[in-house]
Length: 179
Length: 286
Image: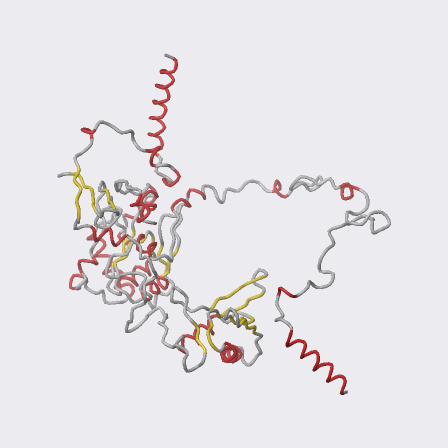
C-alpha cells in the first residue's frame, strides 16, 4: 500500500516535472528529449500518418545538409570582396605559396607579450624559400621607407617570419603576384 | 693575424658540421633559472626572501582582499547595478557584409537559394551557440561599399545602411526571431534530423522583441508587407539609389520566398518528421 502510494506520488511528481520542463523552452540542449517528452499514450489517440518516399520536399532537406568537403571556387568575372583565386603555380619564379584549405592567403600575424611583439608569418612556402624571402623583404622595406626589416626563415616547415605587422602589405603583394 | 684567420676559419668549419641552431640545442641563459633548493644554516640559510620579523617572516598569508585593517578595495564602493540581468540579454554575434561577400566569392554560399542561419552555419566558417544566449546573427556594415550580390537573406538584426546596401543590389532582407529551440535546430540541421523528432513550430518573439520585428523599417517578419514595400521606396530615396524592381526579376520566386512565422526550415512544415537515412518524410494524413 505504502509503496503504491509512493509510486502514485512519484508519477504525479514526474508529470508535474515534465510539464514544468516543457514550459521552460530556454536552453533545450541541456534538457533531454526523453525526460521532457510526453509518456506514450494509446495508439488511437495519435493522428494517422503516412510515410512519403521520394517526397517533392526532399530538395529542401538536401539544402539543409552541409557540404562534406570545402567547395572549389568558381571562376567569376569579378570578385567584389577583393579575394582572388590562385593563378600562379610558381614554375617561373622558382617558389610557390600554396593557399590554405579554405582558399585563403597563408599570411598571419602572431602577437606575443600583450601585443608588444608582432611577427608576420608567411606559411606554406614551397620551392626556393630564400629568393622569396629576398623579394618579400624588399617589399616590406620599401613600405617602411627603406628601414631594415629582420626576418627568419624556417626552410623545413616552409615559413618566413617578418618582424612587425606587415600582413596587409605581404597579402596584397602575394595576391598581385598571382599566389 | 694569420693565426686569427685560421681560428675563425676553424670556427666556421666547426659551425658547418654542427647541427642547426635551434631551441632544442640551446642551453638557458646563465642565472636565468632559479635553484629550487634553499640553503640551510651557514650554506646560504638566511631569510630566504621572507624579510625580517612580522607576518612576512611568519608567512601567515592573509585572506584574499584583506588590507591589514584598511577598508578593503572590494568593500570601498557601493553596489552599482551596471550589469544587472546581463546573463539574460540576447546576444547577436556580428557577421559583416564583407564576410558575406567573401563567403559568396569563395563559393561557400549558394545565392540562388534564400540564405538563413542554417546556410551560414553550414558554410562551416560561422558558428552559433544558442546555449550561450546567442539568438542569431546581426549583419553589420563593414564592406558595405563593395557589396554586390543579389540575395534573399534572413538575419536577426540589421542596421538601416545594411538594409539599403542589400536592397540597392536588388536583394531582399528580412529580420526574424527564432526561439532557442529553433536556433538549436538551425545551427546544425543534420545533427538535429538524426535525432528523429518531429519538427516543432517556431515560437513567437518575447514581449520586448515584438516592437523590433513588427517594424517595417527593420524589415521585420511580422511587419505589414505593404508597409515594407513602401519603406523600400522611402529608403531608396533617402540613400539616393534607383530601387531595382524585383517583380520584373528572373529570380522573383526565390527573392520573395519567406518562411511562415511559425516555420523553422524553408519548405518543411512543423509536425513533419524527416528520416535522412531512408530519405522519407512522415506526414500527417489529410
